[in-house]
Image 1 (cartoon, helix red, strand yellow):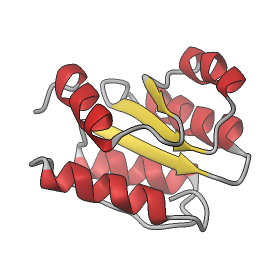
Image 2: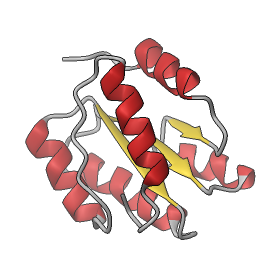
Image 3: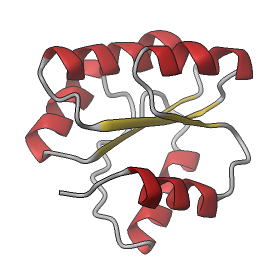
Image 4: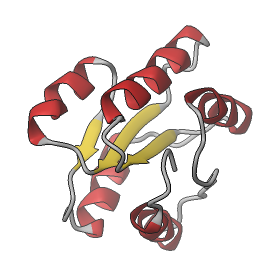
Length: 120
C-alpha cells in the first residue's frame, strides 16, 4: 500500500489468505520505514509491495535496502503494480525476488510463493 490505488493489493492479499497464508495488510500511504518496521515486528516470511504512482524504483529499493540494513534480509520481497518491463532487472538487482506485472493470474502468484517461500 505505497499509494492510494489499493484494489489490486487487496485482491492479492485475499488470494493469499484464501490459500492459507496469514496476511498482515498495513494499508495505503505507508513509508518504507513503516513497512520495514512492521515486517520486522511481525517477523514476516514475505513482504509484498504494490505501487501505481511511478515511484516504484525508489520506494521498493528503499524497502529492500532498509530490510538489509536492519538484518532482515531473509524476508522475501515481491512487488506488483504498474511497473514497466524494463524496470524489472533493476528491481531484481536491488533485492526484489519477483515482480508480478498487471494481469498476472492469482494462481501464478500463489504458486510462485508456495514454491519459493519457506515459512517459519
